[in-house]
Image (cartoon, rainbow over all chains, first blue to last red; front, side, top):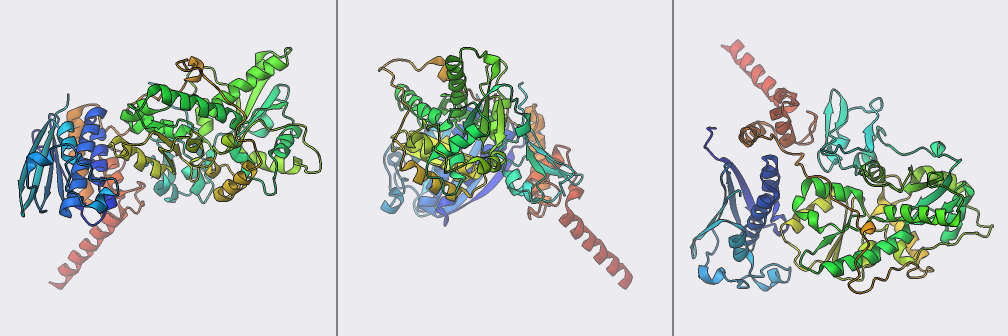
Length: 143
Length: 431
């Protein structure tokens, strides 16, 4: 590894196991603690990543989570081959949700997923094509 | 930096270097080195899981021995409520209390009595703080306090600062003794906590230097159990009367402390691994409506402490039947609206945060190390067999990079390499 090449961590987010959602963010959290990042930054990343993981499980039967870490920036890329987001602006509104009732009855699908990802990240990029899939890229900058 | 003093240690003569504690340790604080278990003091939270599971009884807790109690002092027993669940056919807690007096104690102050006061103070604290910082996390279990201090720095401000029952009981017991016996001097009075777990020993040992510790001795419940058995006499009418109600007696079972708060929005978790999962979830904002979180390191709550004698589920049932004939509550604090909670009650402070898991203080160096850990981890078989002395292959990779062990300690990998060599040799002969 050269000095500028980011550390890369890959996780498969299992779409068949609802209760396993959030495992990747817990592992990332530990790794970032080991590298000495500030607890508040680590919390922001784990909250945003957790929301992303849940979204992939609810809407897209899982996907891939990739985390790239440099001392200056942590990038989280969540990629799925799910149904895609029809109206990104609408999905960004708090309380808007297309989650089915059975998911909502479990306390998820409150329409806070994307808004929280935006709130907790420093930069959020959504690339979604209906019927093809969604890729979300979040950047987090240490204070 | 304040050095944390532990209460769990190893009896090296008894340790066979098996991998039981290695796998059971919830914070991966144990390694096997040179055939013996070693506990990393920076990661150990004194939960006692290694004591619970060690097949050779090689882990011990640093309790005060019964014979070391100074009998020339005015000794006050502080029985944890879990003690009452240890005895079959106990239908009135007064028999047990009388048994303690007959063992030579001069007075008794029930932990359950103090717990009722802590319940009131906690309710008042939550009311004054409002919901913005909720959920509030109980600090009665010292393992939880240490775990949050070490690993969940963003949850530190959610910890309830109200003194735990053990502290309040010790304080009030001493005050009462000095008041009732004006001839006694403070140094003549000694409190003896009868504990279900080693974590309470750590709690006493780690009292900050500028703070008074109101508990002088911590003896193990299993030690007291046998002594009490022979003293408890059901034919004699007890001369002492319990000062606790059902609320205080509900504390030792998981969920008891929380339900006593009369707030439905609570969660009660028990067992260290479960607690870690819940704390991770709270940190990720998973439970928005939660007001209070009760956590006990031991399965089932304090009744599951490693120094108890009885199965925790049976102890729980016994306590429940004792509660039926107790007054709901015997100790109450009523604060006027807006009246502040006394400073001396708000004593819990989280320990200093220093990530014990940090690879290196230098960020660039820790990056290089993390990259190396990832590389080495991929070379390992992923069996998590523990033969190398680390609990998982991942932990082994970290140990190698930290310079604490060698890649060659992996026997599975060595065997693969040996096989490959033999194969090569075989080929050589053929040609």
